[in-house]
Image 1: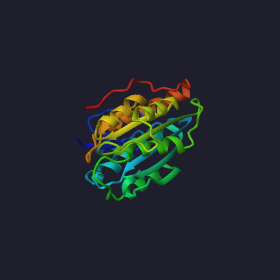
Image 2 (image 1 turned 90 degrees about the horizontal axis):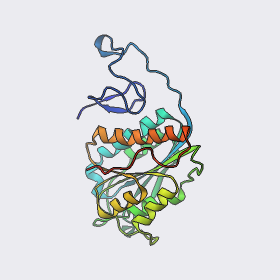
Image 3 (image 1 turned 45 degrees about the horizontal axis):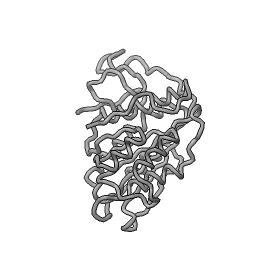
Image 4 (image 1 turned 45 degrees about the vertical axis):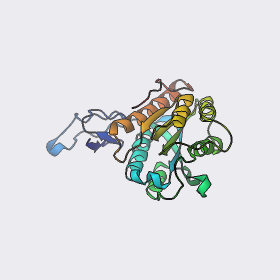
Length: 253
Protein backbone atom coordinates (compact mmCIF):
# COMPACT_ATOMS: atom_id res chain seq x y z
CA UNK A 1 0.00 0.00 0.00
CA UNK A 2 1.31 3.45 -0.94
CA UNK A 3 1.61 6.24 1.60
CA UNK A 4 2.04 10.00 1.61
CA UNK A 5 3.28 12.49 4.16
CA UNK A 6 0.82 14.67 6.03
CA UNK A 7 1.92 18.31 5.48
CA UNK A 8 0.68 19.22 8.95
CA UNK A 9 2.10 16.63 11.38
CA UNK A 10 4.53 14.87 8.97
CA UNK A 11 3.15 11.40 9.74
CA UNK A 12 2.86 8.82 6.97
CA UNK A 13 -0.73 8.24 5.89
CA UNK A 14 -2.23 5.75 3.45
CA UNK A 15 -2.81 7.48 0.11
CA UNK A 16 -6.46 6.40 0.06
CA UNK A 17 -7.21 8.29 3.29
CA UNK A 18 -8.67 11.79 2.91
CA UNK A 19 -8.10 12.95 6.51
CA UNK A 20 -4.95 12.45 8.60
CA UNK A 21 -5.90 10.41 11.71
CA UNK A 22 -3.16 12.09 13.72
CA UNK A 23 -3.98 15.78 13.25
CA UNK A 24 -7.10 16.00 11.09
CA UNK A 25 -5.42 17.53 8.00
CA UNK A 26 -7.73 17.19 4.99
CA UNK A 27 -5.80 16.26 1.85
CA UNK A 28 -8.55 17.20 -0.58
CA UNK A 29 -8.97 20.78 0.65
CA UNK A 30 -7.13 23.68 -0.94
CA UNK A 31 -5.23 21.86 -3.66
CA UNK A 32 -3.60 24.21 -6.19
CA UNK A 33 -1.62 23.67 -9.34
CA UNK A 34 0.81 20.80 -9.28
CA UNK A 35 -0.91 19.29 -6.26
CA UNK A 36 0.59 21.83 -3.85
CA UNK A 37 -1.69 23.02 -1.08
CA UNK A 38 -2.53 26.73 -1.22
CA UNK A 39 -4.04 26.60 2.26
CA UNK A 40 -1.54 26.39 5.14
CA UNK A 41 -2.17 23.65 7.69
CA UNK A 42 -4.41 24.72 10.54
CA UNK A 43 -2.46 25.47 13.69
CA UNK A 44 -3.98 23.22 16.28
CA UNK A 45 -3.17 23.98 19.92
CA UNK A 46 -1.47 21.07 21.62
CA UNK A 47 -3.28 19.57 24.57
CA UNK A 48 -1.84 20.42 27.99
CA UNK A 49 -0.67 16.97 29.00
CA UNK A 50 2.48 14.91 28.83
CA UNK A 51 2.82 11.63 26.98
CA UNK A 52 5.34 9.06 28.17
CA UNK A 53 6.10 6.31 25.67
CA UNK A 54 8.46 3.46 26.55
CA UNK A 55 9.55 1.18 23.71
CA UNK A 56 11.47 -2.07 23.93
CA UNK A 57 12.91 -3.58 20.75
CA UNK A 58 14.00 -7.22 20.42
CA UNK A 59 17.53 -6.92 19.01
CA UNK A 60 18.19 -10.63 18.52
CA UNK A 61 19.02 -12.01 15.10
CA UNK A 62 15.46 -13.21 14.59
CA UNK A 63 14.35 -9.57 14.26
CA UNK A 64 16.80 -8.89 11.43
CA UNK A 65 14.11 -9.81 8.90
CA UNK A 66 12.16 -6.76 10.14
CA UNK A 67 15.05 -4.27 10.32
CA UNK A 68 13.51 -2.03 7.65
CA UNK A 69 10.00 -2.12 9.04
CA UNK A 70 10.85 -1.52 12.72
CA UNK A 71 12.07 2.10 12.27
CA UNK A 72 9.04 2.81 10.07
CA UNK A 73 6.80 1.43 12.79
CA UNK A 74 8.40 3.54 15.52
CA UNK A 75 8.16 6.72 13.46
CA UNK A 76 4.59 5.97 12.43
CA UNK A 77 3.55 5.62 16.07
CA UNK A 78 5.45 8.57 17.53
CA UNK A 79 5.12 11.34 14.94
CA UNK A 80 1.33 11.90 15.19
CA UNK A 81 1.57 11.97 18.99
CA UNK A 82 3.97 14.91 18.82
CA UNK A 83 1.35 16.89 16.93
CA UNK A 84 -1.21 16.23 19.64
CA UNK A 85 0.47 16.59 23.03
CA UNK A 86 2.34 19.50 24.58
CA UNK A 87 5.21 17.30 25.70
CA UNK A 88 6.30 13.82 24.62
CA UNK A 89 9.05 11.92 26.44
CA UNK A 90 10.38 8.67 25.06
CA UNK A 91 12.31 5.77 26.55
CA UNK A 92 13.83 3.44 23.97
CA UNK A 93 15.33 0.15 25.11
CA UNK A 94 16.67 -2.89 23.30
CA UNK A 95 16.54 -6.39 24.73
CA UNK A 96 17.56 -9.90 23.80
CA UNK A 97 18.20 -13.32 25.28
CA UNK A 98 19.44 -12.91 28.87
CA UNK A 99 20.67 -16.51 28.80
CA UNK A 100 23.05 -15.49 26.01
CA UNK A 101 24.30 -12.39 27.84
CA UNK A 102 22.07 -9.93 25.97
CA UNK A 103 21.06 -7.57 28.75
CA UNK A 104 18.56 -4.75 28.33
CA UNK A 105 20.20 -1.56 27.04
CA UNK A 106 18.49 1.81 27.49
CA UNK A 107 19.44 3.98 24.50
CA UNK A 108 17.04 6.88 25.15
CA UNK A 109 15.92 7.95 28.63
CA UNK A 110 13.14 10.50 28.72
CA UNK A 111 14.30 11.90 25.39
CA UNK A 112 12.58 13.31 22.34
CA UNK A 113 10.86 11.57 19.47
CA UNK A 114 13.83 12.49 17.28
CA UNK A 115 16.17 10.81 19.79
CA UNK A 116 14.13 7.62 19.56
CA UNK A 117 13.98 7.71 15.76
CA UNK A 118 17.77 7.98 15.60
CA UNK A 119 18.25 5.24 18.19
CA UNK A 120 16.06 2.68 16.46
CA UNK A 121 17.95 3.20 13.20
CA UNK A 122 21.21 2.37 15.00
CA UNK A 123 20.09 -1.03 16.32
CA UNK A 124 22.01 -4.04 15.04
CA UNK A 125 19.93 -7.22 15.10
CA UNK A 126 22.14 -10.19 15.89
CA UNK A 127 22.88 -12.92 18.39
CA UNK A 128 20.54 -14.58 20.83
CA UNK A 129 19.92 -18.25 21.22
CA UNK A 130 17.02 -20.18 19.78
CA UNK A 131 13.61 -18.59 20.35
CA UNK A 132 11.91 -17.78 22.69
CA UNK A 133 13.53 -14.61 24.12
CA UNK A 134 13.11 -12.53 27.30
CA UNK A 135 10.31 -10.22 26.15
CA UNK A 136 8.43 -10.32 29.46
CA UNK A 137 11.54 -9.23 31.36
CA UNK A 138 11.98 -6.32 28.95
CA UNK A 139 8.39 -5.14 29.39
CA UNK A 140 8.62 -5.55 33.16
CA UNK A 141 11.84 -3.51 33.21
CA UNK A 142 10.07 -0.57 31.55
CA UNK A 143 7.05 -0.99 33.81
CA UNK A 144 9.16 -0.76 36.96
CA UNK A 145 11.91 1.71 36.00
CA UNK A 146 10.27 4.44 33.92
CA UNK A 147 9.15 7.29 36.24
CA UNK A 148 5.51 7.10 35.19
CA UNK A 149 3.40 10.11 36.18
CA UNK A 150 0.71 8.74 38.47
CA UNK A 151 -1.83 11.55 38.01
CA UNK A 152 -4.01 10.54 35.02
CA UNK A 153 -5.21 14.14 34.67
CA UNK A 154 -1.71 15.24 33.68
CA UNK A 155 -0.25 12.45 31.59
CA UNK A 156 -0.76 9.31 29.55
CA UNK A 157 1.76 6.49 29.51
CA UNK A 158 2.22 3.70 26.97
CA UNK A 159 4.51 0.70 26.55
CA UNK A 160 5.33 -0.62 23.07
CA UNK A 161 6.91 -4.04 22.50
CA UNK A 162 8.55 -4.84 19.14
CA UNK A 163 9.42 -8.52 19.05
CA UNK A 164 9.48 -11.87 17.31
CA UNK A 165 8.78 -15.35 18.73
CA UNK A 166 7.41 -16.13 22.18
CA UNK A 167 8.83 -15.07 25.54
CA UNK A 168 10.72 -17.07 28.09
CA UNK A 169 9.29 -16.92 31.62
CA UNK A 170 10.08 -13.70 33.45
CA UNK A 171 12.96 -14.05 35.88
CA UNK A 172 10.89 -12.26 38.52
CA UNK A 173 8.60 -15.28 38.58
CA UNK A 174 5.60 -13.27 37.43
CA UNK A 175 3.40 -14.67 34.69
CA UNK A 176 2.48 -12.82 31.53
CA UNK A 177 -0.99 -12.30 32.99
CA UNK A 178 0.37 -10.82 36.22
CA UNK A 179 2.60 -8.37 34.34
CA UNK A 180 -0.31 -7.41 32.11
CA UNK A 181 -2.54 -6.82 35.10
CA UNK A 182 0.08 -4.56 36.66
CA UNK A 183 0.23 -2.53 33.43
CA UNK A 184 -3.53 -2.12 33.55
CA UNK A 185 -3.49 -1.17 37.24
CA UNK A 186 -1.02 1.63 36.50
CA UNK A 187 -3.37 2.99 33.85
CA UNK A 188 -0.82 2.42 31.09
CA UNK A 189 -1.58 1.52 27.49
CA UNK A 190 0.12 -1.52 25.97
CA UNK A 191 0.83 -2.05 22.28
CA UNK A 192 2.44 -5.25 21.03
CA UNK A 193 3.86 -5.20 17.49
CA UNK A 194 4.85 -8.84 17.45
CA UNK A 195 4.43 -12.34 16.12
CA UNK A 196 1.42 -13.49 18.11
CA UNK A 197 2.19 -16.25 20.60
CA UNK A 198 0.33 -17.68 23.61
CA UNK A 199 2.27 -15.72 26.25
CA UNK A 200 2.20 -12.45 24.34
CA UNK A 201 -1.54 -12.82 23.78
CA UNK A 202 -1.98 -13.49 27.51
CA UNK A 203 0.06 -10.35 28.31
CA UNK A 204 -1.99 -8.28 25.88
CA UNK A 205 -5.37 -9.50 27.12
CA UNK A 206 -4.49 -9.00 30.80
CA UNK A 207 -3.39 -5.42 30.11
CA UNK A 208 -6.41 -4.81 27.87
CA UNK A 209 -3.93 -3.77 25.21
CA UNK A 210 -3.64 -4.15 21.45
CA UNK A 211 -1.67 -6.61 19.33
CA UNK A 212 -0.52 -5.90 15.78
CA UNK A 213 1.57 -8.10 13.45
CA UNK A 214 5.23 -7.11 13.08
CA UNK A 215 6.24 -6.64 9.45
CA UNK A 216 9.09 -5.43 7.29
CA UNK A 217 6.47 -3.50 5.31
CA UNK A 218 4.11 -2.23 8.02
CA UNK A 219 0.53 -1.61 7.01
CA UNK A 220 -0.09 2.16 7.33
CA UNK A 221 -3.57 1.38 8.63
CA UNK A 222 -2.08 -0.50 11.59
CA UNK A 223 0.26 2.39 12.40
CA UNK A 224 -2.59 4.87 12.08
CA UNK A 225 -4.70 2.75 14.39
CA UNK A 226 -2.00 2.70 17.08
CA UNK A 227 -1.32 6.43 16.76
CA UNK A 228 -5.02 7.32 16.77
CA UNK A 229 -5.64 5.29 19.94
CA UNK A 230 -2.79 7.09 21.73
CA UNK A 231 -4.08 10.42 20.41
CA UNK A 232 -7.60 9.60 21.56
CA UNK A 233 -6.35 8.77 25.04
CA UNK A 234 -4.46 12.09 25.12
CA UNK A 235 -7.71 13.92 24.39
CA UNK A 236 -9.41 11.97 27.14
CA UNK A 237 -6.67 12.78 29.66
CA UNK A 238 -6.99 16.48 28.89
CA UNK A 239 -10.77 16.50 29.00
CA UNK A 240 -11.80 13.92 31.56
CA UNK A 241 -8.76 12.68 33.43
CA UNK A 242 -9.85 9.09 32.81
CA UNK A 243 -7.53 6.16 33.36
CA UNK A 244 -8.73 3.75 30.67
CA UNK A 245 -8.57 3.90 26.86
CA UNK A 246 -11.52 5.32 24.95
CA UNK A 247 -12.13 2.23 22.88
CA UNK A 248 -12.29 -1.42 23.77
CA UNK A 249 -9.26 -3.51 22.84
CA UNK A 250 -9.49 -5.62 19.76
CA UNK A 251 -7.52 -8.44 18.26
CA UNK A 252 -5.88 -7.66 14.95
CA UNK A 253 -5.51 -10.74 12.80
